[in-house]
Amino acid sequence: MKNEKLERCLKRKRLRNNALKRAILEVIEESDMALKAEEIQQRLRNYPVRKPAINTIYRTLQILVDCDVISAINVGQTRYFTKHGASYFICRECNRLISGPKLPEEVKRKIAKWFETDDAFEMVIYNLCKRCK
Ligand SMILES: [Zn+2]
Image (cartoon, rainbow, N blue to C red; front, side, top):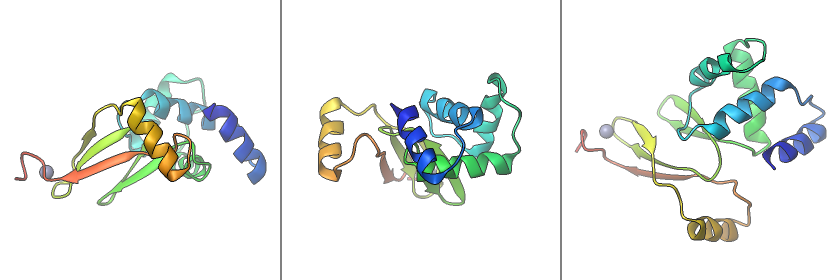
């Protein structure tokens, strides 16, 4: 489903649907944690794609965000990338980010209804972590 949405979007933007875009999307889809571009670059070593420079990865990530098949979360100076429908806790003091609970289907349905979207959202909860209290 994500791949079809991406394909439609790339066609609209007249961009090629290449193996790198699909591989990056897969890395993010398979991760339970939001990832930095550098972490995505490392994980791509397990994929049969040419090893891309970090700038290429950033550019590709931005296209995936623009096509709304992944989300970006900015925490301080750091930009994380995540699949849709995930939840995260972020400490507003030290900027630590960890995975939150898996959202129940009912919660996902309500969010989707309210925002009139499919699963294109993420839930982020800010507070002070134990260390910073
Ligand atoms: Zn903290």
